[in-house]
Length: 214
Image (cartoon, rainbow, N blue to C red; front, top):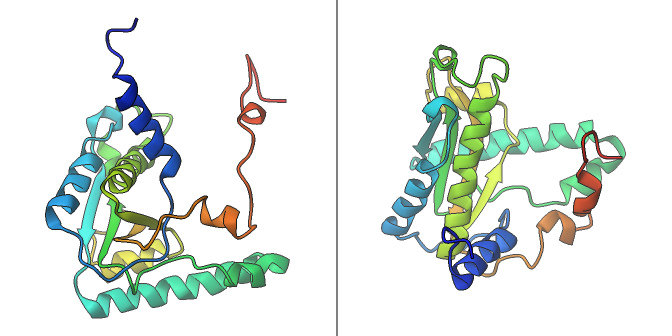
């Protein structure tokens, strides 16, 4: 027996929250309890980070005009993406890709300024700050699912435009708009799979032994 392993019930809870995490797009207007929101942010801040640089910055959006400007920015990018998708463009436009106007909690996650001074773990893999911040977002996402709170990661935006909207320093880099709130129900499967956009690959097809997967 592994003395460091959690109990079976605890392990099952962890695997369940991983399986049932969803990228949510539909939200109820009910406010999120701020104690719950704080726990989710603390879970994010417990994430690992390369060289312990903790590159994530979380910006809470409260101003309604700013929220609307962000929604319009995302809608502009949604149409630009549809054009880039050629024959799948119309199918893409039918997808609901964000809940910015509906969600009670709206947050921006950005990479911090002065990132170039962090060399530990980033000399050859400069993108590890992005990987670290992504781990923080995943922690928040999983904590949200455990709390019964939906989270949607929106990436359809121009980083420079968003940086200007939130008045972020020049050397920062926004990576996510997070829509957070109560939901009527969590999707039974990922929404893009429900809508027939794509399906999950088989794990065995993504694993190689001593070389690239065949």
